[in-house]
Image 1 (tube, rainbow, N blue to C red):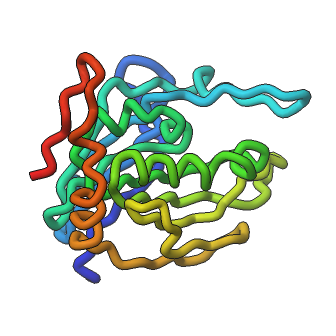
Image 2 (cartoon, helix red, strand yellow):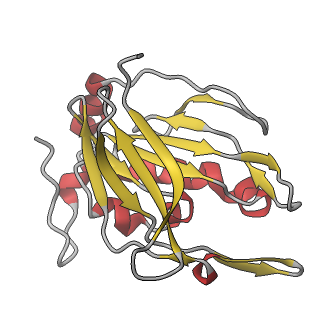
Length: 201
């Protein structure tokens, strides 16, 4: 009805082989067609005192990075804990936008969420959209929230600073991205073995 692209993340989709599920992001075009699927690769495990999580007990890990084209933008898909693994995004270069639907715990989100989102934007010279679930859940678990959009220079364009529902909007500029990449062509300066320079064409 609104002629929009929708990145719907995340959904538990059951594996055909086991009783466990993938943590899945689906992308839909304005016709309602499912154009891409990403199954979360990195499974979260954390323990500090009584606070403990282990996604590997119920989830299956995906096996491949996924990027898709949305109105000419190269969009890299990722989920929550994936944000801590920069090699995932480097495997998808070049990128214009990274999307990160997430439910960071309050403990980790308070110190790491914004820091990691900014790092991924700066090092890949692209926009990053972090959609953070935030609030206290029925189980008592508390998630951080702070949905935000960051530009390739690491500047926060918009954010929801508190927990709970809300809308965050910003306009992406291909001119801004090109300008930053021309002024600081860091992606073409990579020299480590096995990591070829990314084409910015």
